[in-house]
Length: 198
Image 1 (cartoon, rainbow, N blue to C red):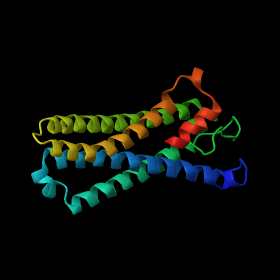
Image 2 (image 1 turned 90 degrees about the horizontal axis):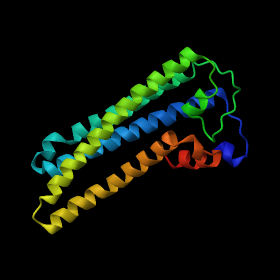
Image 3 (image 1 turned 45 degrees about the horizontal axis):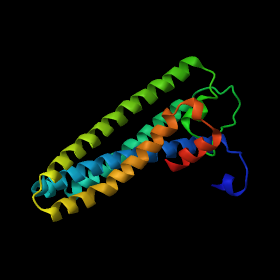
């Protein structure tokens, strides 16, 4: 934010590493919390009588702590791995903040580069499993909602789930677009806008 306010593009190595650490930590924690919220919605709608025993305040605190802790751990591991790469393509990042794909473009070590891709691949597998969990939760939720006899009950359940689905859709669609879009439609300004959105 300081760089934007003072119209400078300089950032220290430690500042860049801190940005990557916080970006990954917050991203992972947010995605974990979104997954936990899907579980919460599932239990609230599909097993309402068991809600207090399955998702009491202690269980919620433990899940939130696990989300933040795993996000920070993943951020530390990914940041340490990324910043162990030697940079030979200069140190200018084509982004208004430091993120791993931009830093990988500056790397010149093939073995380290492949190691970082292995870490990213593992992360994608974990995120895909969370996505499948969210998807299956909502399939069960909508099956339960459509079986409800009362219009009021269906409306109440839908109003509980739709804001969460909006957040999940916005979060995942911008990330997928940012990292999976074809290079033919890639431009620096588009990359900046999409990165800012997610």
